[in-house]
Length: 178
Image 1 (cartoon, rainbow, N blue to C red):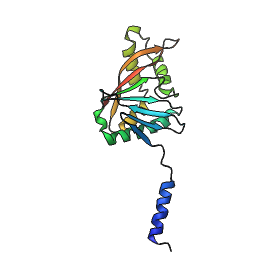
Image 2 (image 1 turned 60 degrees about the horizontal axis):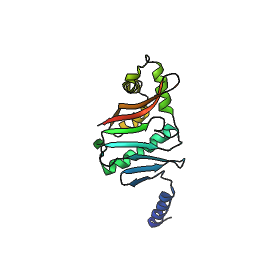
Image 3 (image 1 turned 90 degrees about the horizontal axis):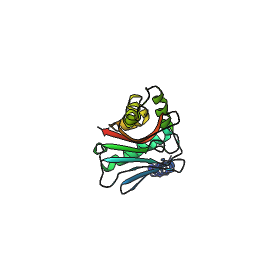
Image 4 (image 1 turned 90 degrees about the vertical axis):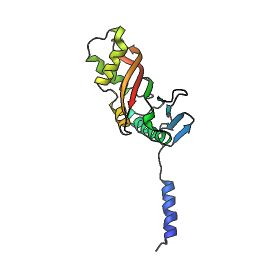
């Protein structure tokens, strides 16, 4: 029969041997995580604009796997400061927002097909409305909801259209609310 100190030591060895997944790296205003593809995904909090989160990804992972990394980053950020203190989320360019995964950009094109032709002088607002009405970012919204937050596209800038005159890219800004 094993004595409790031996059991305790064996338990500690097993605990240390179990893989825990990627760790979040914090460097001043940047929270980074390295995915299984060895590529970085990060949230940056711009200096002098500490109410903004900027998402940057170099990942080659599918959107679903990146979202689990985003969830870990949000959990870690929340340890340093309440997530409710952030008011805006910047994805930057939609086609680059999730590294090589173009799922949300492809959804924007598909959603735009079901809308009337867009007048180019109203393109930014039309793309914002399409993104929200067709909920092209449903999984991202779900991740934020898991942290008690709601997100909604509040502004789109610098929209790009394809040869069929359908939007596929732009700089996306979300409002963040508790």
